Image (cartoon, rainbow, N blue to C red):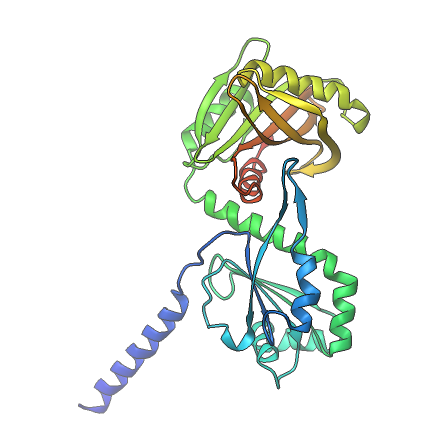
Length: 339
């Protein structure tokens, strides 16, 4: 074999290896699953310290659920392409340890300099090590400094993870949307929302006392309702009785006599999509169907048209975790915009 042929074969091998690195196994599992990587794995000092900042409980009225489920491994056991969607690496930036070497490789020379000068201690790498994945690095130049980072900034971790998961989930869901349905709803009602093919139109009523739209994905049931009413001012927490009555009337008429337990509804001020909103969250039930579950509704005021928009999310998933389903509903619904 001559030298030219050898070079061609060698270049082909290099290209193949490079393409294999780029075509890593796609991330699998739930966005609620987190692979936690520390030097000694489960039970080591940093694993014990960081877990409570990730395993935060959420109140779904009938159940308390942690937003994330953790699998903890040693840094030495972390392969080049872990298949989970979300990875958290926690440890001291020390080239003499497996976790330190992983961190140095991930954050690069610039990140090393920032950590060495105490300027960056929680770093997020989207689409690393592969598209669809995210790696969050929690590090510092010494053990004392890392303990200080967790004490001061540990409370930010769940929000960082939630926002990253929400963006990636939305991107995956919106890969294929019902464009014709989106356009029809915009022409008819003046709002836009990206609608994944996984969701189907359940009802669509322009006139009558309770106009609105319902979209649903089942097995288990995830429902998004959009409805509206004339409203003369920005709603506040002082308007909770009127807001309760607004939703109660709509769901009674449009959701086949659904009700809410007034003692299990909470109200908070928040932002939804790009808008200030009042968030209602609580328990819905239907005596006819002997059914019930969690709901949350975002109430948004359009000053120009004096309309109150309601973006209504509910799940019916007996004996199933609610958090991943609610996260999916939010990922879809937060594409809502009114004109």
